[in-house]
Image (cartoon, rainbow, N blue to C red; front, side, top):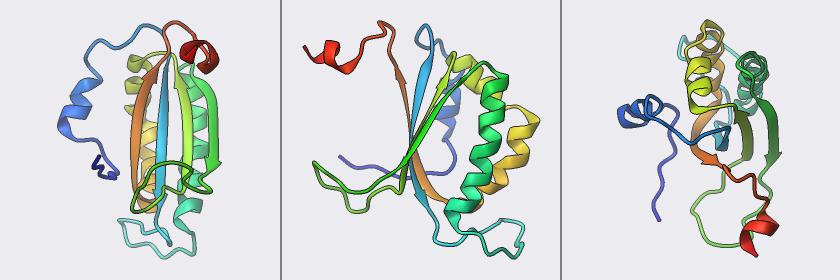
Length: 145
């Protein structure tokens, strides 16, 4: 399996937000890879690490997420790869719950998101965002059997 870390979605991925999605909430799984030092596109000097710059973004996202009726954010450091093989591990895993795909798209267009986006770009070397849904509300134990 090949993968490519990205900071921004491509055209097809953006178009996907306008398509009908699953009913109910979506759970966005984020696999995050940080730059060692934050690098702002406007050239500003900073002593922030990539993770610290992304932390500024994440705090703003939490407020925006609440404004569109989402929540349930979870974040944890990646400590090791237990199974499988990859060239390079991600640094952190984060999960955010949105009431719908449309709510996530609405949030992405908020002026506040545009303002804090500079910190995301400054801090991230790349990421994978994986949209998941659980329409039946099943927990893993009941889904695996």
